[in-house]
Length: 120
Length: 108
Image (tube, rainbow over all chains, first blue to last red; front, side):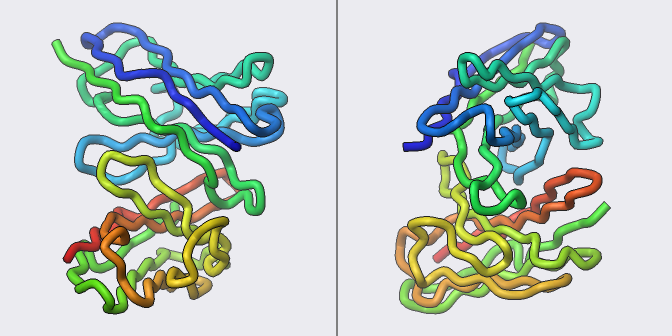
Protein backbone atom coordinates (compact mmCIF):
# COMPACT_ATOMS: atom_id res chain seq x y z
CA UNK A 1 0.00 0.00 0.00
CA UNK A 2 1.39 3.38 -1.02
CA UNK A 3 1.66 5.76 1.93
CA UNK A 4 3.13 9.20 2.52
CA UNK A 5 3.50 9.97 6.21
CA UNK A 6 4.34 13.51 7.21
CA UNK A 7 5.91 14.89 10.35
CA UNK A 8 3.72 16.40 13.03
CA UNK A 9 2.43 19.85 13.77
CA UNK A 10 4.92 22.58 14.55
CA UNK A 11 4.62 25.86 16.44
CA UNK A 12 7.43 28.29 15.73
CA UNK A 13 8.31 31.94 16.25
CA UNK A 14 9.05 34.35 13.41
CA UNK A 15 12.66 34.13 12.33
CA UNK A 16 13.09 30.51 13.40
CA UNK A 17 14.06 27.72 11.02
CA UNK A 18 12.08 24.58 10.30
CA UNK A 19 12.33 21.37 8.31
CA UNK A 20 9.30 19.12 7.85
CA UNK A 21 9.37 15.66 6.37
CA UNK A 22 7.40 13.25 4.22
CA UNK A 23 8.25 9.54 4.31
CA UNK A 24 7.12 7.33 1.47
CA UNK A 25 6.48 3.60 1.64
CA UNK A 26 4.88 0.87 -0.43
CA UNK A 27 6.54 1.91 -3.68
CA UNK A 28 9.93 2.76 -5.19
CA UNK A 29 10.42 6.17 -3.59
CA UNK A 30 13.38 7.17 -5.74
CA UNK A 31 11.42 6.80 -8.98
CA UNK A 32 8.49 9.13 -8.33
CA UNK A 33 8.49 12.91 -8.09
CA UNK A 34 7.28 14.31 -4.75
CA UNK A 35 5.59 17.71 -4.62
CA UNK A 36 4.81 20.08 -1.78
CA UNK A 37 1.50 21.94 -1.66
CA UNK A 38 0.53 24.78 0.67
CA UNK A 39 -2.94 25.45 2.00
CA UNK A 40 -3.30 28.60 4.04
CA UNK A 41 -6.12 28.71 6.60
CA UNK A 42 -9.47 28.65 4.82
CA UNK A 43 -7.84 28.95 1.40
CA UNK A 44 -7.10 26.85 -1.64
CA UNK A 45 -4.19 24.71 -2.77
CA UNK A 46 -0.90 26.16 -4.01
CA UNK A 47 1.86 24.13 -5.65
CA UNK A 48 5.24 25.02 -4.14
CA UNK A 49 7.69 22.77 -5.91
CA UNK A 50 8.67 19.23 -6.76
CA UNK A 51 11.67 16.94 -6.42
CA UNK A 52 12.79 13.71 -8.06
CA UNK A 53 14.41 11.73 -5.24
CA UNK A 54 16.45 9.59 -7.63
CA UNK A 55 18.71 12.47 -8.62
CA UNK A 56 17.37 15.37 -6.48
CA UNK A 57 16.28 17.32 -9.57
CA UNK A 58 14.14 20.07 -8.04
CA UNK A 59 11.77 22.62 -9.55
CA UNK A 60 10.06 25.48 -7.77
CA UNK A 61 7.00 27.56 -8.37
CA UNK A 62 8.11 31.14 -9.03
CA UNK A 63 6.00 32.15 -6.05
CA UNK A 64 8.12 30.02 -3.70
CA UNK A 65 11.56 30.14 -5.34
CA UNK A 66 14.05 31.43 -2.77
CA UNK A 67 11.51 31.18 0.05
CA UNK A 68 11.83 27.46 0.80
CA UNK A 69 14.16 24.57 0.06
CA UNK A 70 12.99 21.16 -1.06
CA UNK A 71 15.28 18.17 -0.61
CA UNK A 72 15.14 14.40 -0.40
CA UNK A 73 17.10 11.46 1.00
CA UNK A 74 16.32 8.42 -1.09
CA UNK A 75 18.18 6.15 1.33
CA UNK A 76 15.44 6.70 3.90
CA UNK A 77 12.61 7.40 1.40
CA UNK A 78 12.01 10.87 2.80
CA UNK A 79 11.43 14.27 1.26
CA UNK A 80 11.79 17.56 3.11
CA UNK A 81 10.53 21.12 3.03
CA UNK A 82 12.70 23.66 4.80
CA UNK A 83 12.59 27.29 5.86
CA UNK A 84 15.55 29.29 7.20
CA UNK A 85 13.55 32.21 8.59
CA UNK A 86 9.83 31.71 9.13
CA UNK A 87 7.26 34.46 8.82
CA UNK A 88 3.74 34.65 10.22
CA UNK A 89 2.50 34.33 6.66
CA UNK A 90 4.02 30.83 6.48
CA UNK A 91 1.27 29.62 8.81
CA UNK A 92 -0.48 26.92 6.80
CA UNK A 93 -1.06 23.24 6.25
CA UNK A 94 1.60 21.70 4.06
CA UNK A 95 0.98 18.55 2.07
CA UNK A 96 3.39 16.32 0.21
CA UNK A 97 2.03 14.45 -2.77
CA UNK A 98 3.35 11.87 -5.23
CA UNK A 99 3.24 12.63 -8.92
CA UNK A 100 0.89 10.21 -10.63
CA UNK A 101 1.86 6.73 -11.69
CA UNK A 102 -0.45 6.79 -14.72
CA UNK A 103 -0.07 10.47 -15.51
CA UNK A 104 2.63 12.99 -14.69
CA UNK A 105 0.00 15.72 -14.73
CA UNK A 106 -1.54 14.93 -11.36
CA UNK A 107 -0.85 13.78 -7.81
CA UNK A 108 -2.21 10.35 -6.94
CA UNK A 109 -1.20 9.95 -3.28
CA UNK A 110 -1.06 12.61 -0.60
CA UNK A 111 0.36 12.85 2.88
CA UNK A 112 -1.90 13.66 5.80
CA UNK A 113 -0.52 17.20 6.04
CA UNK A 114 1.79 19.02 8.45
CA UNK A 115 0.35 22.07 10.19
CA UNK A 116 2.86 24.86 10.67
CA UNK A 117 1.93 27.74 12.95
CA UNK A 118 4.22 30.77 13.14
CA UNK A 119 3.39 33.18 15.92
CA UNK A 120 5.23 35.41 18.32
CA UNK B 1 1.09 32.09 -16.59
CA UNK B 2 -2.08 30.05 -17.03
CA UNK B 3 -4.89 30.92 -14.64
CA UNK B 4 -7.53 28.33 -13.72
CA UNK B 5 -10.94 29.76 -12.83
CA UNK B 6 -13.59 27.61 -11.19
CA UNK B 7 -17.26 28.37 -11.02
CA UNK B 8 -19.41 28.70 -9.09
CA UNK B 9 -17.62 29.38 -5.81
CA UNK B 10 -20.39 27.52 -3.98
CA UNK B 11 -22.82 24.98 -5.37
CA UNK B 12 -25.95 24.07 -3.44
CA UNK B 13 -27.47 20.75 -4.46
CA UNK B 14 -29.62 18.10 -2.77
CA UNK B 15 -28.68 14.44 -2.35
CA UNK B 16 -29.71 12.41 -5.39
CA UNK B 17 -29.38 15.38 -7.73
CA UNK B 18 -26.67 16.07 -10.31
CA UNK B 19 -23.81 18.45 -9.58
CA UNK B 20 -21.79 20.13 -12.31
CA UNK B 21 -18.55 21.98 -11.68
CA UNK B 22 -16.82 24.22 -14.21
CA UNK B 23 -13.12 24.94 -14.65
CA UNK B 24 -11.85 27.38 -17.26
CA UNK B 25 -8.23 27.88 -18.30
CA UNK B 26 -6.95 31.26 -19.48
CA UNK B 27 -5.36 29.49 -22.46
CA UNK B 28 -5.51 26.01 -23.92
CA UNK B 29 -4.16 23.29 -21.63
CA UNK B 30 -4.95 20.32 -23.88
CA UNK B 31 -6.16 17.51 -21.58
CA UNK B 32 -3.67 18.13 -18.76
CA UNK B 33 -6.42 18.64 -16.22
CA UNK B 34 -7.12 16.87 -12.95
CA UNK B 35 -9.88 17.13 -10.36
CA UNK B 36 -9.56 16.62 -6.60
CA UNK B 37 -11.98 16.32 -3.71
CA UNK B 38 -11.11 17.70 -0.29
CA UNK B 39 -13.22 17.08 2.77
CA UNK B 40 -12.76 19.14 5.95
CA UNK B 41 -9.66 18.14 7.86
CA UNK B 42 -8.49 15.78 5.13
CA UNK B 43 -5.89 15.80 2.38
CA UNK B 44 -7.08 16.21 -1.20
CA UNK B 45 -8.04 13.05 -3.07
CA UNK B 46 -7.46 12.58 -6.79
CA UNK B 47 -10.71 11.95 -8.68
CA UNK B 48 -10.00 12.55 -12.36
CA UNK B 49 -6.85 12.94 -14.45
CA UNK B 50 -6.27 13.54 -18.13
CA UNK B 51 -9.55 15.50 -18.02
CA UNK B 52 -11.73 12.36 -18.14
CA UNK B 53 -10.01 9.31 -16.60
CA UNK B 54 -11.24 8.24 -13.19
CA UNK B 55 -8.53 7.51 -10.65
CA UNK B 56 -8.37 4.11 -9.01
CA UNK B 57 -11.30 3.46 -6.70
CA UNK B 58 -13.32 6.51 -7.72
CA UNK B 59 -17.03 5.70 -8.12
CA UNK B 60 -18.55 5.79 -11.58
CA UNK B 61 -20.91 8.62 -10.58
CA UNK B 62 -17.90 10.95 -10.97
CA UNK B 63 -17.07 11.92 -14.54
CA UNK B 64 -14.89 14.51 -16.21
CA UNK B 65 -15.04 16.05 -19.65
CA UNK B 66 -13.62 18.86 -21.73
CA UNK B 67 -10.42 19.89 -23.44
CA UNK B 68 -8.65 23.07 -24.38
CA UNK B 69 -9.97 25.75 -22.04
CA UNK B 70 -13.30 24.41 -20.76
CA UNK B 71 -13.63 21.49 -18.39
CA UNK B 72 -16.45 19.96 -16.38
CA UNK B 73 -16.69 17.61 -13.42
CA UNK B 74 -20.07 15.95 -12.99
CA UNK B 75 -21.40 13.96 -10.08
CA UNK B 76 -24.42 12.16 -11.46
CA UNK B 77 -26.35 11.43 -8.25
CA UNK B 78 -25.08 13.07 -5.13
CA UNK B 79 -24.49 11.15 -1.95
CA UNK B 80 -24.00 12.68 1.46
CA UNK B 81 -20.28 11.81 1.43
CA UNK B 82 -19.76 13.89 -1.73
CA UNK B 83 -20.21 17.21 0.04
CA UNK B 84 -16.74 18.73 -0.02
CA UNK B 85 -14.57 21.24 -1.87
CA UNK B 86 -13.54 20.36 -5.42
CA UNK B 87 -10.41 21.67 -7.13
CA UNK B 88 -9.27 21.52 -10.70
CA UNK B 89 -5.54 21.48 -11.46
CA UNK B 90 -3.56 22.08 -14.61
CA UNK B 91 -0.11 20.76 -15.49
CA UNK B 92 2.35 22.56 -17.74
CA UNK B 93 5.43 20.65 -18.81
CA UNK B 94 7.66 23.63 -19.62
CA UNK B 95 8.28 25.44 -17.51
CA UNK B 96 7.17 22.78 -15.05
CA UNK B 97 4.18 24.15 -13.24
CA UNK B 98 1.08 22.85 -11.50
CA UNK B 99 -1.76 25.34 -11.05
CA UNK B 100 -4.88 24.80 -8.97
CA UNK B 101 -8.21 26.53 -9.39
CA UNK B 102 -9.60 28.32 -6.35
CA UNK B 103 -12.08 25.54 -5.58
CA UNK B 104 -15.85 25.06 -5.56
CA UNK B 105 -17.60 24.20 -2.31
CA UNK B 106 -20.41 21.71 -2.72
CA UNK B 107 -23.02 22.12 -0.01
CA UNK B 108 -26.47 20.91 0.72
